[in-house]
Length: 58
Length: 398
Ligand SMILES: Cc1cc2nc3c(=O)[nH]c(=O)nc-3n(C[C@H](O)[C@H](O)[C@H](O)COP(=O)(O)OP(=O)(O)OC[C@H]3O[C@@H](n4cnc5c(N)ncnc54)[C@H](O)[C@@H]3O)c2cc1C
Ligand code: SF4
Ligand code: SF4
Image 1: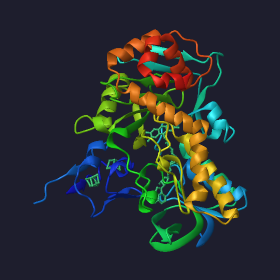
Image 2: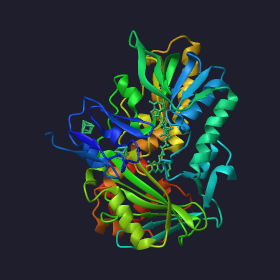
Image 3: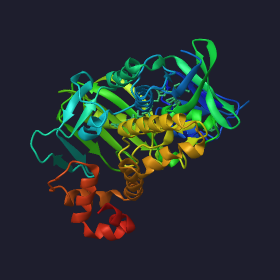
Image 4: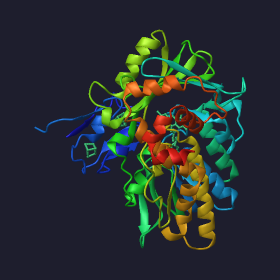
């Protein structure tokens, strides 16, 4: 599951532009993750600040 | 905001502002919807623009110009500084804008000309009828409403979600997103009239680090690296922090921003039925420099011109709007994007040793013109070997 560290996120939209599923959406400063996210991790790789993390589901 | 316009513009950056202003200047009704609460903030830009490029759209005004540039420097991977001075001493070659004010000025001009503007108002989905984009559902402070239009202009920047919702794939390939961070630093020792670019795999892999002066002792200090090279422990922020710690240990950080810049090819097609895509949303950033302010203003204005024609003739199909796509591709901007894409692809594959070699050998040139292209031409002129390596590309440059 993809997790947003909101204290780190700079709501810049870099991650939004690379998501192949279109699963990310910025509502001004709030990054939303939609159900279509496959936890592929592409967004987490490119985030300039390191605000995204794919965590294992329990 | 009304619920019907001739032209609905999604996004209030330079592309959207020019689109709306052009549409109303030509007698149409237009509305800009901008999801952020303020135009121009937070800044997602190093704010550099060439003098002539800017003047094509607006006369320079000290209110939104932070600094005037007369030269530039390129620092090779080995630390060697190549200085490029404008031929005519004291001659301005470019500006560092204050985009918080500049973007507002552009939107203000659109509003003054008669466009409606709604901030904190997000387009959340397109309205599609018989395959035509005929408007957008917009959400504004808890209110949802449908706004219809003859033509919708997507100017929604790097995120480019609106066109995606219309069925156009706008995904930027990982290796072609510049993952970027920038600090505004103050109380630092800089040359206040020269931009500086740092190259090299250890400094900014497949990208560059920049110092763009904002005043006598302050500057935008930022970096963009390829998404491919980004990851835990080696993100844009890690590289920038290392540089700042070493170069400006006393600097005071007064602004911290992040961003993404696409350096891929533009979208295969930048129109749809009832839809025109402009600026960063169309991926028309210069792939070599990462500059997109001019290209956004250019495509925004052109989009509105084509929309006006098409609405006038009662035909807003993809086929009719294709004039836009063809015109920008054939323009100076379109050709520069194509050519600079090849140059970028060539340069990012060069090892540091080769980059050092090139920069050392061209360090003594006296540029007649101050453009990226004149620099590339000189590089080829001085390194004839490079011409062979560049192959067909070299021919297109001369
Ligand atoms: C770190 C960095 C440095 C840069 N440096 C330079 C430089 O020195 N020189 C240069 O020329 N270019 C530079 N650029 C590129 C430049 O900033 C962009 O090309 C330019 O801002 C693009 O203009 P635009 O109007 O297309 O998009 P933007 O300016 O990004 O505007 C798009 C707007 O649309 C809004 N929006 C998005 N989705 C919606 C929605 N659904 N509903 C309503 N509104 C929406 C956004 O909030 C945003 O305000 C840089 C970019 C970055 C990230
Ligand atoms: S790329 Fe990172 S900082 Fe930027 S919006 Fe996405 S999570 Fe936030
Ligand atoms: S993990 Fe993959 S699918 Fe999920 S938001 Fe990130 S890029 Fe998109």
